[in-house]
Every structure is written in structure tokens, then in C-alpha cells.
Image 1 (cartoon, rainbow, N blue to C red):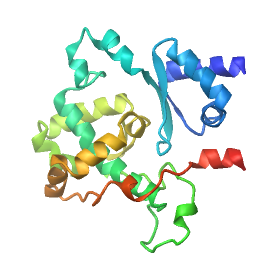
Image 2: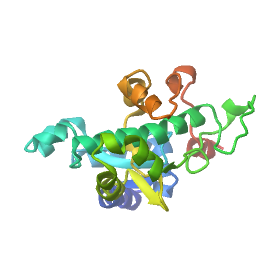
Image 3: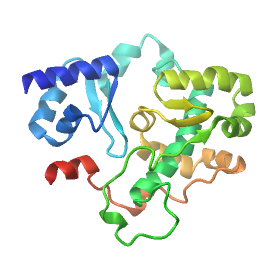
Image 4: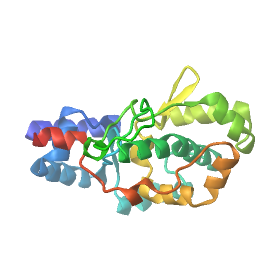
Amino acid sequence: MEHELKTLTARLLAHRWLPRNDRLVRRALVDETFRVELDHRLAAVGLQLQDNPYAGHVAAVLTPEMLEPVFGARREYAASNVGLTRDEVALLVVVWSLIILPKRERQVTRRELADDGQGDMFGAEKPVVHGDTVSGGLTEASLIADFGPLLGGKTKVKNFMLGKLARLGFIERRNGVLYEGPLLDVALDYRVLADRIIHGTLADVLKNAGHAVPAANAFEAAEVLPDVDDQEEDA
């Protein structure tokens, strides 16, 4: 176990995020003894494992008490500790809203992108699905057309802002389409942001741009169920 703990800790520090179906990550999620020791090692350097059962990745992040010592000399960290400007943070939240909110609704209701809209009486028994079957894409052209004028124009959004979000791991750009990156779901707190967006000002912004948002927070109508990795280990 010592070698595996050292390997996983080093990989988290080197890569920042890892897929949750990785063998060692899965062990950390289902093996309590292994997880306790991993948490202890990460905590020794001011880090913790960021895990969201609906996200396809896990990440190593700073513990709350280390934010001020690490980023306190740069006051802009209060808005972003990865060097994002206000416009870039706004774009990130818009992208998160258009990709993660619909994805979470599909995950909670156990639906997939290919569903024909018919109800599934056994849907609640299905494991949580990650990846392209539930996470859809967003065309750059439609995003820029709807929000570009509000965020500095087409050139700025396309050539600079989206590129920066991609480099940081929030999105992936493929042939003019934006997809969820490894950090988009795990780094942004759904429970905090969803309610503020669905019942807040951004909901009007999205509606005015022609993008529908869920009528309510998906978690209000469903319990958080074990994900597929946990069920596979229990089998």
C-alpha cells in the first residue's frame, strides 16, 4: 500500500487532476483505510482531494486554511486563484451553466443525451454515468454570438479567453465545439452555483440569449446515489 499511496500522491501533485476510473483513484474512493492515509499525506502539504461523484475527475486542491498563506500576497485571488480576470470568470460561469447544469439534470434523472424523451420507470436504479453520454457540447459560434458582445467581443473571447480556459483544464475545444474539461465539474461547486444561477440574475441572461435553464435545482428532487465506481467495487 505504501508504494501505491506514494504513486497516487505524486501523480495528483504532478497532474493536478486524474480520471475517477483510474485504478488508484477508485481505490481511494472506496477503500477507507487507503483514503484516510491519502488525506493525511495531502493535508501535510496543505492539500485535499476534491471529489464530486457526478464529476469524471478528481483533483488536488488547497485546503481552506491555506488559501490566505498561499495567495494572500496577490489580492486578486479572492476572485480567482488561477489568474482569471472578471470577464474570464464570467465566461467560465456561463460555460459551466450551459454544459454542467443540463448534464447534472441528466445524471440525477438517469437520462442520456441519446434518450428519446420517454420516461424510464427503472431510471433511479441506474448508476451515475459520466462522460460524453451525458455531457453535451457547446458550439463556439453560438456562445460568441450570444455572449461575445458582453465579454469584450468575438476576437477576445475566441482567441484569448477560451484558449485560457482550455489551458487551465476547464474546457476542451474540438473542431469549433466546447466540451467539459477535467476541472469544469470538479472545481466549481454545483450546490453553491446552481441555486444562484437557476434563481439568480444569470438565469435571465441565459434566457435572454435563448438558453433554457432547469426549473429547479436537480438535487432538490433526488437523493445523491452511489456512483458506478462504488457499485462495481461492492459487487
